[in-house]
Length: 215
Image (cartoon, rainbow, N blue to C red):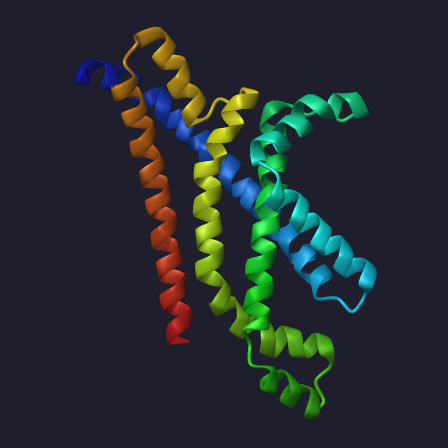
């Protein structure tokens, strides 16, 4: 183990880890917005919206995320979409994870007892009031774990943006391996930082889960 080398390059990996966190957070926020729209579409009374929702989920879950990133970044300029690597990474990951999160949100909503929905409508709640006051507070508790799993998968999947030259953890590791020829030490640092980020997210999910369980 070349510890002096690891200490020397560690600051560069910390900077790269911050880029990974930024990409993951922005992609997660975009994914949640997309998921809310797609879940609503799949549960809509409109045949067109339901078809669109199913089509979106089928496309983004049925094709590799790497291919989606390549189409967006390398194929985008052919249709007038010119994105820098960071923006392409965020959008590509966000659109992809949104398809998975849509199913988590939909599953949480469907997991709420139908009888409570009917009771709320019986006492005069509108459909929107029923959703906001009865369904979503209970569905949120059911969504925490699945969405947490999606978030962790997103963090690990963010390594794919290295293929479009985003300078995050994996890209930084590959760059240093090319100059140091020390893959064990270099990938060891990258793995450690990924584990720290994932652990922090896992702990946050546990805290949210316990808080909702108490309530």
